[in-house]
Length: 636
Ligand code: TNX
Image (cartoon, rainbow, N blue to C red):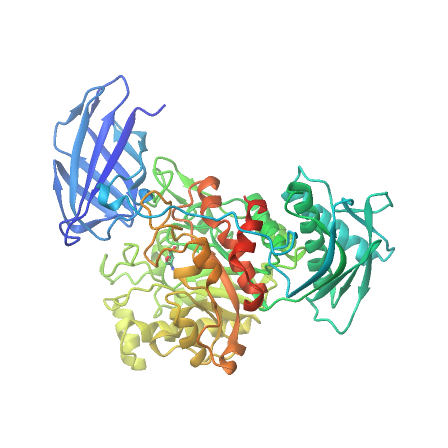
């Protein structure tokens, strides 16, 4: 039972130096609280020079704050301790920017503290919530993403599904696979495909058609039957998925959606890469949730899953050569080697995937035509590695010689040490064995530009190789990492900063343009193949309305569902440039995603908006139609 509550209030000012976070710890229990310290985690961080009011001292690691109250403070039942921090690193903009979780330590015991939402003066609490119009139908069909061509002359509602009229094993297996997908997503709805005749079923026939793209399909409707023509096995699955969606729409919303009677749907995706990225380091999601997310991706015909398996907050992939990465490096909080971060501060929080889990997830994805792109985020974002294996740091580098944007000290692998490359060779070798996809994503984002400058080993490397700054050292590192991957038969994928400091030879390299919309074009001009994933539009952790009450962040911008939907990834590209744009991706960063409820609110319907951007040609997109469909989207 919680006996302590932490309320918080944000007091903005002209400068962040004067901005204040006011906090009040209230004893709602029945016993006095004495000789204690308070820890809380919040994205609105106290600056190193912050001034405390009515508290003695503090220490901070990234989002973790530990505060010592004034000496001798006792809190009787019903009493509050009010104190403030003046001097913040970043402003607060939304209700979840304050303390997310916390605990009190007293007498060696840890007591959970309940944190209420951050409050702010009324002038900050204006703005819009997430809004979604009812939308309207162009055609009474539940299909998302929308096909390239829909020419249906008449509709019907006197059928309820499809009878599979084939004995070809591949067709039968495909239909039963899509049945299983529907059943997992919507256990309440009837299955779309039956294997024996029945009066109210439409007969479904299959034809392989070599003139269609491998992932293309057409559906020809007549009064008695529908014919699914497909280029390859993938196109067959996509056609079946569309049939399953049509049935599901009619079942859930018969007033909105119908079956076609006569006419044709002809379809193939716009982009080869329609991805979703999931950060499981900031908050862990178990293999079961990951598989459900994969089902959702298959439902909207997405085909790449980028699994962000490591970050400062925890390493989540079992590596047999380095067992401590997961036995130790996957945990944070009291009793572990890392401070708590964001949610669940009072617990030893963590989780990881065994290699068995990974094989299961990869197999599940393969059955859904989804490639799994594993990400090991290096050289930055490596606190979990460096805490687990301190020998991997240059021992002569002073502590706190640089901080990442998230506030982690000295969190980047050292490019001048053999230990670094020896470690990576073994990690990548195990990954190459686990993940069949041609690419491994190596991160490369957000290395602070003072990183390594105080490391004597890096200083020597810079002299030897004539490297001028941190980014040039990073480019040297990336070149070596690329070589390791090549020797394992893998190509390198990374965030856009891989191009910094001179970058690396673009041949076979795939970069994700995230920092600004213009970066897609800039990277393409440098010759890289690119995935368009601008934080401003495709980051699912950005709020969906300007309002204080919206969960999420807005440092990259506010992305309403409509704005995410409307974003055109190829804007400003020459026709040659368009060839290097391989596709689009939604990124689900999970700092704020402490529950599936928050996750679902933030991710949907925007994930489907990115799926439609990846699939549907711009001239066939229609925001009102999309909104009309969105009530039926699945969620975690
Ligand atoms: C930036 S985007 C990051 C992530 C954070 C995200 C939060 C990128 C490559 N790096 O580490 O989770 O912002 O929005």
